[in-house]
Structure formats: C-alpha cells, structure tokens
Length: 252
Image (cartoon, rainbow, N blue to C red; front, side, top):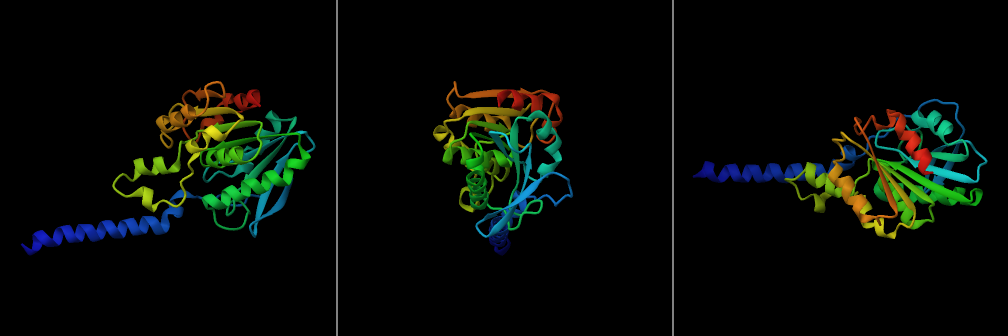
C-alpha cells in the first residue's frame, strides 16, 4: 500500500521539478548566441535600453534600406557577401541581437523588439523606403517591427505562427502556456501589417513544421502575401540554394 502511494508522489515531484527547470532555464533552450567574428565590413554601434548593439551595414548611401534579423545561432556576417551582391541598390543592415556577435546583454523577446525599433528609428531619416527580412527566430522580430513601424516589404524565411505553438508541440506534457516567457506571437500581428509579404519555406523543414508556417500565411490577406517553397532544402540549409537570395531580390 505504501509503495502504491509513493510512486505517484515521486512522479509528481519529478514532474514539478522538471517544469521548474524548464521555466528557469527556458532561455538557454531558446537562444543560442553566436560568437563575435572578425570581418572587414563596415559597422556601427547603437545604444538600446542600456545595451550596445553591433550593426553591420552594406552598400551605404542608397535611398532604399533592408534590415535583416537572423535565425537562432546565426552569425549574420556569414551572409554579408551575398547581401552585398544581391542588393547593390539597397543599404542593408545586419542586426546582431543583444548577446549575439559583439552586442552586449542577454536576449529576450521584449529586448529584441526594443532593439528592432531602435535600429529602425536610427536609420529612418536616411532612407525613403525601408524593408525588413527575418529568418526563423528573426521572423518574429520582423513581424513585430512591421506591425509597429511603416515598412515597405517584409520577407519572412522559415517563419512560424508563434514560438508558443512550436513549444506546445515539443513539450506537450508540460503547461507551456503558463511556463513560456517569450512567445513571439507573429500570427496575432499579421492582420495589422500593411506591407507586401514574402514567405520562404524549406520543403524539408523539421524545425518549423509547414503547418505552423501555413497558419501564419493564412493570417495575411491573399493579395498581400506570396509564398515560395524551396525544394529539397531544410531549415538550416535553405539559404544555400541559388533560388533563396534571388527570390528575396526579386521580391524587393
């Protein structure tokens, strides 16, 4: 009888302890800051909420601008050559999130949103037209910026409806809605975005299921969004396909 009572109690304690660990260390599972790499591209520092952001910029002096928010663990400088080549008439700003690649601080959803607004507000007087692109994690930052500032075009690469929905699928045993601090609810902002929207999906993406991407697509007006599925690519190698940068370039 004692054993029969003990086992459920032990299981309950283990469940509570695991939930607590998930809550306390969740940002260690969500964010994977990239290291700071040496490079020869131009850059500037930008203050945001007491933190210093490391911003790389390419092809300066153009009236059109593109702000790029990368994926998790992505060193945005790794694509600088491609951005410079494919968008010669566009000044491109590659944003290193707080805590990433030489930017100070620790990443949080609220912090990344404030950084996005700070970048936009810093450059807006220099450009007649500003577009934004966000990949994976960055797609949530891009939708936030497009919902809160006038943006011409929005390119979303391997985007999700919300991190909350992704987490619910991956941690179905736990009360994720109560535990998750950073939800990145892009789908709720879709109807407030007036920009032209491009969604690029990878055919074999196992990180962001197509069902989650499709929910975001469906939240936009049909005449507002265009969709490109790049065949035979996955979440992390979609940018290696020649169609990737060409599709974004044609859209912009």
